[in-house]
Image 1 (cartoon, rainbow, N blue to C red):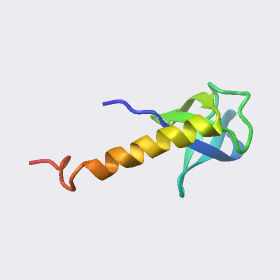
Image 2: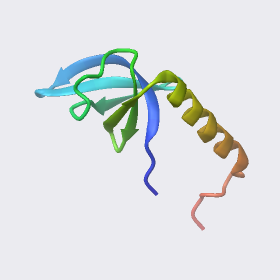
Image 3: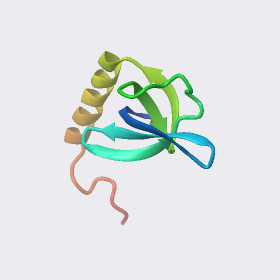
Length: 84
């Protein structure tokens, strides 16, 4: 299953000539490539898929999506996705 997750850009930097950013996913910060969304600035929200920012979105859209993901997580019993 492929899933894009919204996060807030907290830092932008360049690594090996590629525009990168640190993105906050509700307290967890990960690095992501920002090459596909060059207009992104610090505090913008982006959708991250497989380590790449693929689109920008406004804060309201991001918060709605994060709330839905949290609800989905609450509905899935622990161990639902463990291997057997």
